[in-house]
Image: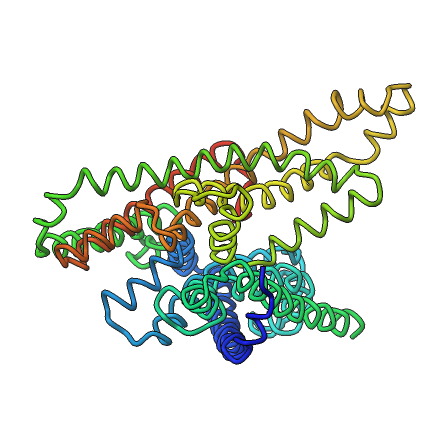
Length: 210
Length: 256
């Protein structure tokens, strides 16, 4: 084993880390927006909206991410980074929609009825009664989803986005030190994941104390 | 005021009518899709369907073997995490959490790079794929087992202690039977996740479903047809497993 190689390739590893971080950040932001909107639409009383959103989640959850990313890249011949991001967002938004829907359903139905009986509109009840309660419930499963985005972002290396996994492979090709490179990348991935988990825990504490 | 016959719009509001409209919509969408599909050129698929089917079979084989191997490894891991003495317990937690925080693709590379160092000779990509998928299955199943063990109410354990049962007897005759029953849906759901993960061993050159599609595409270039088959293969397989889950537990809704 030769750990010296990591110091030699520190620039490559760092640039890979930067790419991984910003792809994950954009993926998290995009899939949260799309997923929350779809989750909310899915828990409205409308029959057709519910059916359509459940078709969306079923379809996207049952296809591997790799299939989506390759489809956008090779079949629709999109550039690498938009293909990677679109794949990530479509994949994770289906899971986030499910999490959101479960969070909204977990707020007792009587609260909605009580709000409506008091003469508030549907939107008002949703904004001031259901949403604040649902946010608290949703934060821990949302953290799991965000960590999953970071983990899944490694797949974009297979369409030559130069992220951490890609740099690991490059180091392996150039020096045959795959073991050391993979160790370093794994440690970096765990650090990024821990950062996200830590900040979500802080967020939850702030939401709970409010 | 005399009520007339309800108008068409009113009648379309009943749940049964809505369901009917939904299925008609699905039918129309299916017909449009079929029309689009029939205009594609299926010659490439006709010549290589056996090859593609073998690939799909390999994916299923990978998923099933590795979930069985993973399950065997997961049992001691989960027991160590729940009942282990202090040192072993923390070691199990660290191992499970570290592997769970690592991207699946990295684990595949890891096992592929590390196995030759450990065993001292060349490891085929099929074995490396089986190894890495088993590792992934083991840590995720360990968490499922742990959740199952915790799902048995504490009062039951106290009750059996109060009736004079030993700790081992409590575990074997009270905790385990209930835990296993509670675990079944989550276990089968893990199989869906693992089946999708098998697509990643494409990266180390195993000729599973995903790779057989891309190889065929490189040879004959029919991306639309082949990717349609690819999506259909994965969707039907995963959807079938999710339906089996619903069969076991009507309350099961989302657990991946």
